[in-house]
Amino acid sequence: MKRRYAVTGVAGSEGDCLVELDGRPVMTPARHPLRVPSRALGDAIAGEWARQEGRVDPSTMPLMRLAATAIDRVAPEPERVVSDLVAWGMSDLVCFRADHPVELVARQAACWQPLVDWVAAEHGAALAVTTGIMPQEHPPESILALRSVLSGLDCFRLVAVHSVASATGSLVIALALLAGRLRAGEAFRAGALDDLWSLEVWGDDAEARRRLDVRQTDIGEADRFLRLLRHQT
Image (cartoon, rainbow, N blue to C red; front, side, top):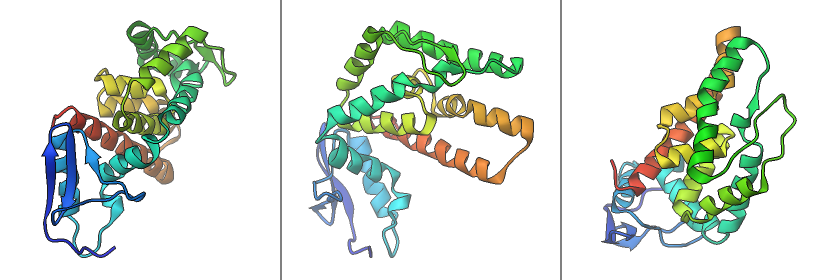
């Protein structure tokens, strides 16, 4: 799409901010006005539009993408997204541990067990940990606890949590990032622990490193989105 606007801006007040181009609302792909609950997020999205030159490149507008996805795809069906995220939790990365070599076993335990303990203490969701690839059944009350936490989130936080869970394979890591228990870099390293271990053991691989870079970028974008929702820069 060719850039056909001169000025970007944000109208409205904190809690209901409308991103505008030349005084007209930005529309999502599904033709909804781009309304966000944080002025800081609205300003950042307007900044993404302002930085476009010649042609608008959506790939350079991660905050816009997350907000539009929240409005178009999450808001109409939040319980579907909640169910998807609960499914992540039922096969959560941090619950599947190696039984060898001892160095990897120790690294997983040191990184992941505190997160398992945290989600049990913080949300009442005790999760079963196993070795190998066969899943363990989690207590029904833990599943209900995770669903309750997720059902209490708005569409904007849900889309960020979904993005992090997709990038890491872990709802627990995503919830820890949401709560500020982990920073973006820590969330990436926790989610990529096995892959980073393989690179250490077998040597660097350009394609594997590229995939990791994409995952790290996705986590960083979701973290920035969440911080802007909290009115932090």
